[in-house]
Structures are given as structure tokens and as C-alpha cells.
Image (cartoon, rainbow, N blue to C red; front, side, top):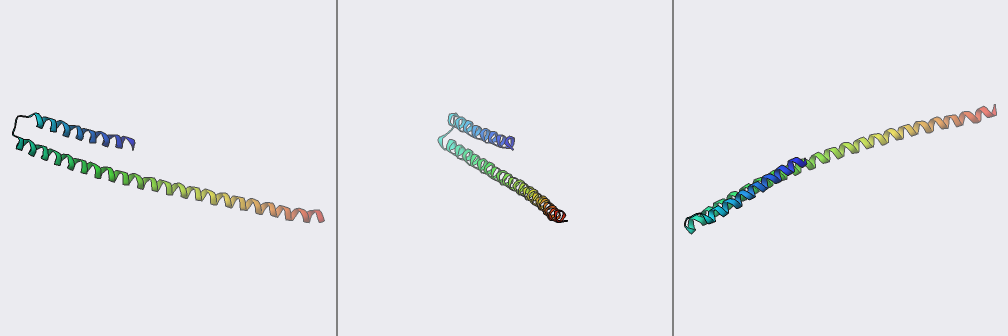
Length: 111
């Protein structure tokens, strides 16, 4: 799971770096101001779209991770409940056996 997050962070860093590099290249390119502004606007819209897509991917991955953790927690709770029920049943059997022995012992002492 941590590899997925670092990969996504790396992708986001790459996209951000590429956008900054493109913006700097546009500023130093020999062209009119109007053309430069249009290219910067187009580049910023592309970056905004890329960020939105990556944000949505991250949200889906986070939701999936939360669902997996929830399922694992529910399974663990079920196992603990089963263990406790088994332990209770075992203790009940032991107590019943001891009570039967105590009932038998006084009867044997009287005889």
C-alpha cells in the first residue's frame, strides 16, 4: 500500500515539475505576449485537469483502503467474539464438572 502512495506522489511531483518547466519555457520563448498568455492558460488548465484526475484516483484508493481496513477489522472482531464464546463454553463445562464432583464428594463422605 505504501508503494502505491509513493508512486502516486511521484506521479504528482512529475506532473507538477513538468508544468513548471513548461511555464518557464513559455516565458522565455520568443513570441507575442498574447500567445504566451494563451499557452500559459492552456498549460494551467491541463495541470488543473491532471491534478483533478490524480485527486480522484487518490480518493478512490483511499476509499478502497478504508473498506479493506474495515473488512479486516470486522473479521478480527468476529474471531475475537468466537474465541470469547469458546472460552465461555469451556469455562461453563469446567464449572459444571467441578460442581458435579462437589455434589458427588459429600454424598460419598456420608456413606
